[in-house]
Image (cartoon, rainbow, N blue to C red; front, side, top):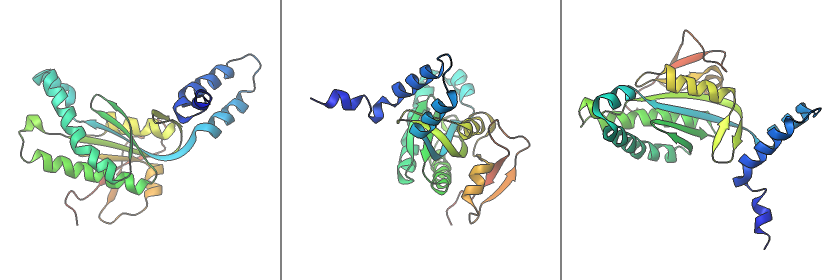
Length: 214
């Protein structure tokens, strides 16, 4: 009999609670800084964040049609989901050919990105170029607002999104300066600076990583 009350403050109510606080923040004379502290206290967490995209996807849709579009999305989820599970990622969102995934540890996020690229390499070997899954990855790390299991917001989220969805090319793993600093040195991995950093990051880097396991 008490469950309706419990649901009002449960994790599934995160979006409603955020909306209520944002509405309260608009009231005349309100202490917005105090509201902001409440929002960060409720929803602020530190995560590594991954945004992915598939290279050349819009061109392939125009050339091969919507069924091809759906097939590639289906196949990409089939090969990426086990990688995400093995590396303790949480898949928050799928939008067309893009994924939003969070990880507690940058090392797990980076290892997952490499595993996903290797999965693409293995998958593509037996298929025609039109069927290839070509992955672009952007990675960030820092404090962000996590709204239940639905979404995350923050500067590093924005930077990772820009890197993965706009800047990265096929096979790229691009990282923010904060992510690289937290990741530290990785055997066989080097980083080259990008000419421009995305909004939300001081600098960004392209990882050089081994496609074949050691």
